[in-house]
Structure formats: C-alpha cells, structure tokens
Image (cartoon, rainbow, N blue to C red; front, side, top):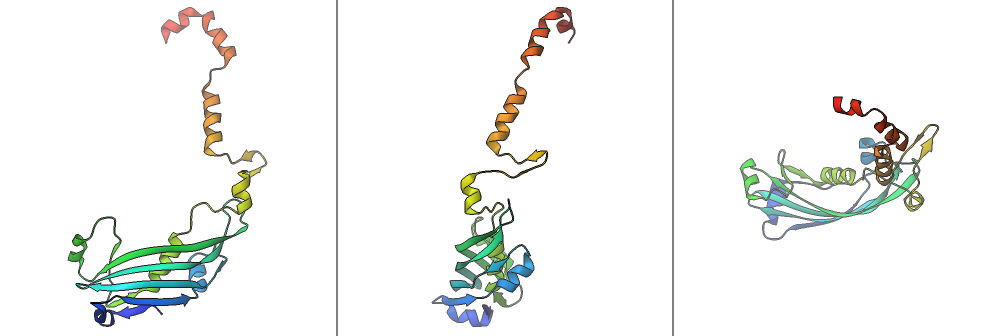
Amino acid sequence: MLKWTLSELAKYRKTPLHFQETLDLKQHLVTRDPEIQDVTPIVVDGYISFDDGDLLASVTLQGSMVIPSTRSLKPVDWPLNFTFSEIYVTDPAHEEKYEEDQLVLDLDGDTLDIQAAIEDHILLSIPMQVLTPEEAQAGEMPEGEDWTVMGEDDYAQTKEADEQPNPAFEKLKGLFPDDEDKH
C-alpha cells in the first residue's frame, strides 16, 4: 500500500523516497465509476520529496482500462500512460510559496495516501468522448427514427442554409411598397 506517515517521510529530507509498485485497482475504480468494465494492473513509479514540512509527489502510471464507447457502448481499450505531480502542505500558509498552476493540497492528518491520488487521477483521465477505432475512422454519427446526431461542421452548414432567405418570399417584397415604410 502506498501510504506513509509524516515521520516516515521526514527521513527523506536529503534524498527523495522512490517507490515502484504494481497495483490492482480494478475493484476500487469500478466501485467509483461503474461504467469501467476492466482495469489491468497499474504499474506505478514515483518519488516523494520532503521539503520544509511539505511533500512533493511525482507519479508515473502505466496500464489500461476498458470503458464503453460514448457512441455505441462497445468496449474500448483505453491506455493509461501519464505522470502527475502534487504538492501536499502541512501548513496552509505554505500554499503561498507555490505557483497557481501547481496542484497544492492540504494534507489531512499525518498520513500521505498516494493510492487515493492515483485513483483520482485515473478517473480524471477518462475523456468525455471515447470511440472505438472503427467509429473514429468512419466518422459516422448514430441515428434513429426521426433523429440524427450531427457534427459541428454539419450543424454550421445547416444553420447557414436556414439563414438564407427564401427566393419565393423575396419576389413578394416588392408587391406592397407601402408596408415597408410602416415597419
């Protein structure tokens, strides 16, 4: 388990704590997001530095999960290969010394649980749109009886066509010239 107390991490003031582990997170992730169908063991490689009471964590994840296509609900093998960094502060006043774009979190209690952060980042890495390779290549949108899904380009063309004046009505404009002055 990737959990350490502050007193354990204080020993790593001069050299960062390096950890490597393979985690089976399937049950935890499926519980948190029931759409996840499968998760391979996640290979975790990271460092934790202890700096003036603050903890700096950098973690690289590798693995994959199976999630449903957002278009057809067919299973899609989604690779996980990314690195995240977080800073845990023990004193809220320390937050000011870090830049705005850095992820700074208050450490609850005296224990750092990196596994919870790993699970959070895996769930946050799931994109809003997931397509099977065939769906991505074909570019076809789903459709049903009396409805279709259209892409942004198709929508823009349809909207542009709707804004074009009807030529039949253009001919009628000149019939009543007095009505134009009243509007």
